[in-house]
Image (cartoon, rainbow, N blue to C red; front, side, top):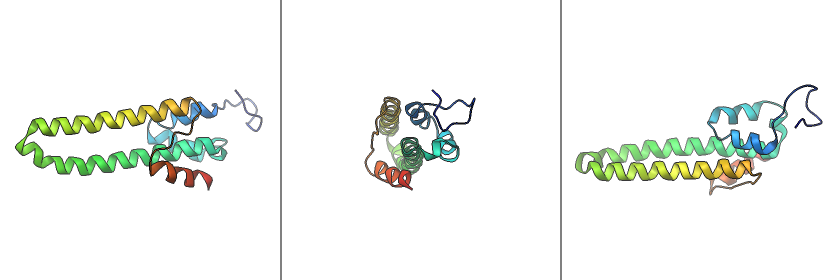
Amino acid sequence: MVKPDAVEGAFVLPDHAAGAIAYLTFAPAIVFLVLEPYNRNSYVRYHSWQSILLFVGAFAVSLVLGFLLIFTLLFSPILHMVVWRAFELFWIAVWVACVVNAAMGKRFKLPVIGELAEQQAKK
């Protein structure tokens, strides 16, 4: 689907596809924030910002959790494994929910991160 303001002959992704692709890693999200016409589309900007903030948040939480779980590894390797796997499953579930909702054309708003992404998308 080529949008009217796109360059003649250029392929432009539909909004919902670009929003879903933004969650693959933070790299496509950054690309969508830089490239036109995606950087003018509030839907794509919102999902790009939420993706970036989600990856940064997950990285920060995993660092803190990893540091705290070092002590559990010394005393109970099974507890360490259970807590770490639970965090991974939670992260995957949130990520899948974001991808699926973006692909369906919905603005799935995560707590805290969704508000920040919405503020950034309006700029």
